[in-house]
Figure 1 (cartoon, one colour):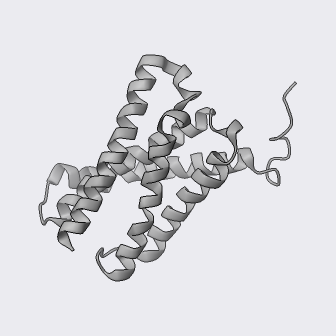
Figure 2 (figure 1 turned 180 degrees about the vertical axis):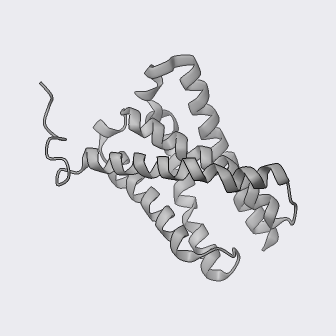
Length: 168
């Protein structure tokens, strides 16, 4: 199991690192123009990584990971719903700036979280990474929640009745 969980964390780290690096490089080279096609550039890898994160729920249920189930379930579910229902299914949403911000925040957190869990699974402690893992979530998690709420608000006609009317 140690090899499996280590491979899982390594695979997730590689996927999220690729996304984060790609987004950062595109933002530096193209500026605001990179927002328009962020989803088209990294959407498939993002979807694969988020679908793979469903395994984390099984890891908790099977006792491979020692984490509380409900917070993990909520995080995985909210990301899947927002990615597949709100963003992937609505083409007009895919080129918005909020999608780039949301992906950046999700991957910023995951680029730190997965190597931390990888080292923890192998019994290695790296103090700087441990500190970063335990402090980075403090600003990133509320910001990503705000971005998620805004994304849902922007696309939900019940919450925002003017979202689907063209602007004058």
